[in-house]
Length: 308
Image (cartoon, rainbow, N blue to C red; front, side, top):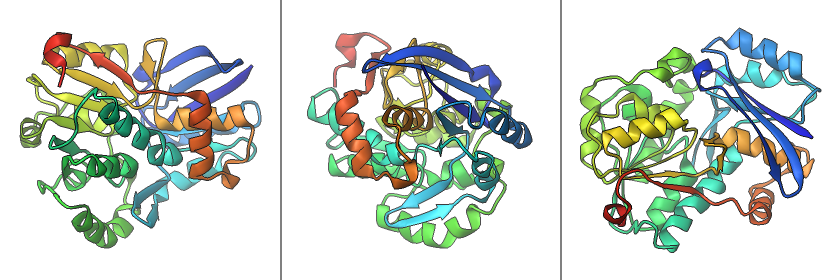
């Protein structure tokens, strides 16, 4: 039996463990949160290194990506370096492949007609594959990178504008303490009442990292569509109460939980038994063709009314 563990800087309240069979291979998949304690995460990785098949790095990314530019997040490097024997994945490849495919799938299969839809992406530098897929589908996209990561109330409406801003800001941002850019630890359990909630009312779809989405999510989300992953049964019930119409998770459901891209990427590497440093996006696309992963579609309120 193969074992994959995501060591996350996120809240321990979101921990989960499942046993699944993927194409005849038995897996134990775990997510262990360290409540923002980086030293604890490093210690746990050292303890498990060489004893499991793959690590996921949760609650922090190694890279921010915009077009052909990649920026390394400084705070991620000691965490990655703690794994000497077992490969560690942060979800970068699946954000380019699986999430791109998920958006195309819901559009091409008439689950949601994305043409002309108003979409708020919490961070295109974090979900660049998703951002490009929305563009291809003809959606009207607002990029929320300045809003969600920097707390600056600026809507970016052009990917080229985002790219030009990223060239200036990203080299500085990736050297900042990561908790200034992203909610870690117990901050993931809190919604923040903020003027930024107004941006949710202006769009049809809110897409991206769920911890960003939840942070400023207003009580009234009637008729909205959320496209994300890493949601728990509690999160789903909460969205239903707020009136969310449809939930799409780009990663499949395992026993009521949709794990993050880092977990799924680690699982694919463990399944293939390959060195991730030698793998390309094409390799991951071929694996996804074999595994036939499909996005999870949840009609949280009346299905007939939810059809769009």
